[in-house]
Image 1 (tube, rainbow, N blue to C red):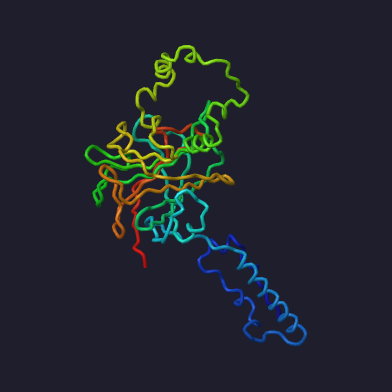
Image 2: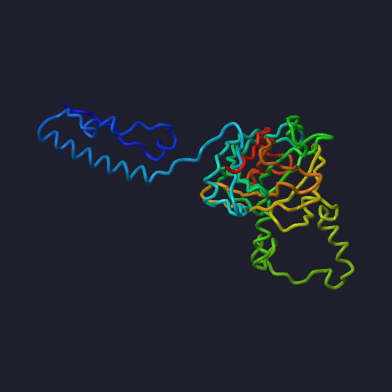
Length: 334
C-alpha cells in the first residue's frame, strides 16, 4: 500500500496560513498506525522520522508573521525606554500590526492624479509617558534629497485635538475642530545626519562644486536682504521651512486645508530606515504635551490617520496618499 505525502509547507505558507495541516496527518506511521509491512514498513518509518526532524528544522527556521489587527491600532504597554528612533528594534515584535489602506487625495487642489503607496503597516507601543509608532511601506526608491523631478519621501500621523467620537474631517481637520500632526521628512533626517558630519545640502547635491565667493561676504549688511530674495519661503515664515527643532519630525496643527502651522510645542522624535525597497519609520511623542495639541490617555480610545508622500512620484503638499480615521487604543499594562 502506497501513501502519497504532500510537500512540507514553506515559510511563506506558514505565515499566510492560519493553521497549517500537521505533518503527521500525512504520515500515520508516526502515530504507530501500521499501513505497510516488512521492509516497506521499516523504510517508511525511517522516512517518517527523518521527515519529522526536517519539519522541526523548517518550523524553527520559519518566523511567524506579526499578529494582524485589521480593526484598530493597538498600542501595547511596554516598560522602560521606547524605540523612539529605532524602527528595527525587536521591541516592535510585541505590537500587533494594522494594515492601513491609503486613498488618493482628490478632494482639493492640487489633487493627486497618480496613485502612490496604497498601504502602510502601523504598530504602536507606549510606556505610560510616551507613545511610539512604527510605520512601514513599500517604496522602490529612497528619495531623501529634493532635486529636479524628485521631492522628499515623507510620512505623517494625524490626531484629533479633541478626543471623542465626533472626529473632524480627516482631510486636515475643519474650522473649530483642529488636528495635530507628526510629520517626518526624509530630507530633514538627511540634513541632520549630514550636519553631524559637517556637510550641508548643497555639497550633497553638488559634491564637485567649488565656492569662489559669496557676495554678502563683501557686504555683510546685504546678507539679510539676499536671504529674503533667494529663500522666500524662509523669509515668509513658512512653518515647514523654518523649523525650531533639528528633529526630522515636526509637529503641526491645522483646521482645514491651507491652515497648517507649526505647533507651539516641538517634542516629537523619529528616525527612518530604508532597506530592500521598504521604509520603516519610528515616530514618537509624549502622551501629554500641553494646550493646543492632542492628549492621549491610557485606556481611552481615540483616532489617527496617516499620509505618505512618494518623492519619486513628485508628491508634496496636498498631493499625497492618505487614510481615513483609524481607531487607536492604548492598552493598560498587565
